[in-house]
Image (cartoon, rainbow, N blue to C red; front, side, top):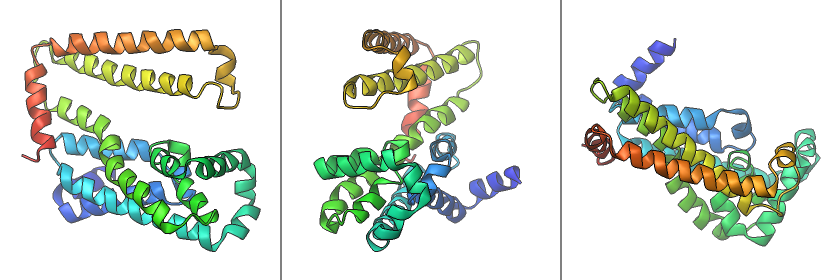
Length: 256
């Protein structure tokens, strides 16, 4: 079945774009996005883009459409059913997250809508909560449109990097190059996550990880991870295969 689905994706442009739009739609839909491995699914589509089987700009456009549909349906669900939603047992169990989202929207509505688009747990909640708070559509529209334009390529990108790496010609150094590329991506992600925790220090509630990752350890880990990421990227950039990789990546991103 999986092989058949991949065959359809690679053979039919219309089917591919429908899959991209549907994934983006479900990932953005109120509460449904909490249950889906959307990040993995978007990265998988990115791998197909990187390997040249799906056009980057068509996939980007389909992702924008799916994102906008999911967000605006979620927004109007929140406006129409705010009473029943507040009484729903699922939201009562996740009341802490709901309260944090409501507080952030009250304080900084535009930034919350825009940044929330890129944060996994809040992505399918923010539009619905904005509707529940009766946020005017014009205040919701601008950050939502900006977020939906920027979100697909950001979530495609790790998969694109992997897909392009697959097409690198086999050589004595190709395995080392791919492992270095993987290490750079992981280290940058780790450094960004640690930086986020550092920035949020004092603003977030205590969690299990915070008991071990004290403020001093957090700062040391953040600086060390950025140092390792920069050092590994420099070493990767010196590899003989880097010009080939840049050329293949440029072809994908320019739609050639």
